[in-house]
Length: 261
Image 1 (cartoon, rainbow, N blue to C red):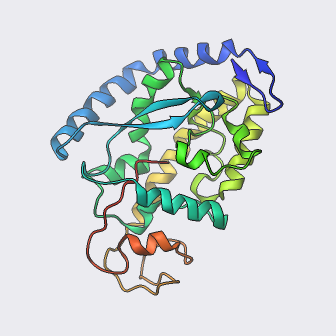
Image 2: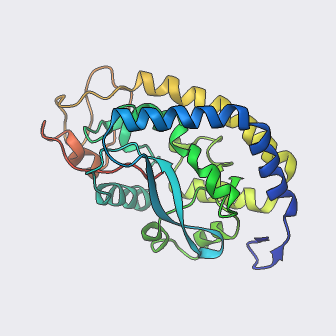
């Protein structure tokens, strides 16, 4: 069931049926890939294979999301939370901290995040009914606590592995633009729209990988505190304070965690 933005409850039996059908049809692809990524994660970085974090689901109910771990096991999460709050308050494009470089990324972590393959274990969340293949991205409880009332309407539908926002700009859009796209999806969801978003997701992932290769961060480069002037790094010239503290003020690694999206 999906609750609309005016508070009513609508049945969406087709959505779970569509999710299960797509998961079963894609089983020969995603299952061997998941097994391979489990082995790579285990060999490349000591620590747990999966990363679980509390997120806000349908109707504001909390649940634990599954992801492949992309950070060193000792990394903490507060840096990401501060960074996201800056983006929310400043209404800036939601550029990932990955772009600014982070020594805390585990081997293959940058590739997993750029490709979106770190989200693959969320198939388990879909099978358990906590998520759908398509829907708004689930936020953390800390982020949700800072939402305005109209922004909280995005939890009136099941959160998704991919969604309308992800295929329409994603990290090039502002926080409020993301909310507007999520609400548009909830008001217009259909089987056809879900299928279109799933198909477009493949093209978007390919584009993200190409962009990631062009934006290889240069750690320790000389940087102006307000303008980033490293040569050959295609990232925004306006750098949030948290990103500056992340590793551009010195060559010393700063603990952070980027498992949130």
